[in-house]
Image 1 (cartoon, rainbow over the protein chains, first blue to last red):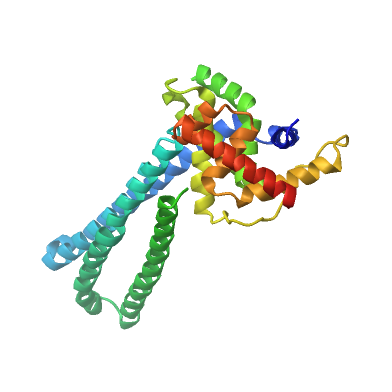
Image 2: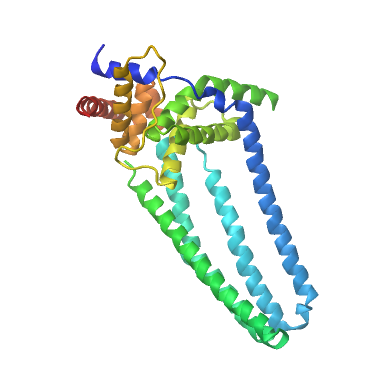
Length: 186
Length: 163
């Protein structure tokens, strides 16, 4: 037995103690649960859209052009960005994992390169639309809401922008690091 | 659907250990990490089994999914580092010599030092896969792989004897 065969023999003699812990049936069930989770997330998104539309009619937003435009801007920005995130996730999980490693790596690199358009073009654009819409609504909030509630909405919005901004920066850095590592993959 | 399930159960039974050991190599001997990776691999196998058209050998297809999953997952979770990590090597049966356990421990340490591609290649070689099949998994020519395998084998032998 040569040196490598000795290593190979040692490798192959590892015990098979983990087999029973993940059964095929439980994996099939788990896959079903994951798909249910996705469907639930889509359902929540649809309900959110409906609530926003109902709110728009509830406050008779359609009677005022500025309010309508502001709602349209905010709605378009929000749902474009969220919709795009879902689409991207779908694209990533549907990359064929049965391709050879080289092809798979290239497909993932291509995906993350496309994600750069989302990060550096779509995100700033949607953020600008959202802020514009909110700014257009501010005078209406000031007139129709109490000072305390107005300030609450105003500060919450600023906080949301800061937290959202930090989240996006972390996400972009993480993806950029992954892209660099995949390009350098040897 | 039932046919597909039966087929999946058979695949799971036949390939579980090989997939698990490959994931163990990628996870530098961390059993929990390897188990999570193995689970993810089999979920992908189940999700994609209906689209498997026999263009490749089933074991080649499974190894491709395994290496691709490990590649992406370990990078995502920043687990991969080119240095020995925490080890949780499987416990051998009573009749196994301590030398073999020690050697396996060394092997995991040495495999952890290899780059991603070499790591996949050497684990598949240790699993006894033919070079032609490893080349099909990695997407490189048989000739290029042959040279690479020779080089990595030497590296592994040298490392395990010096560790």
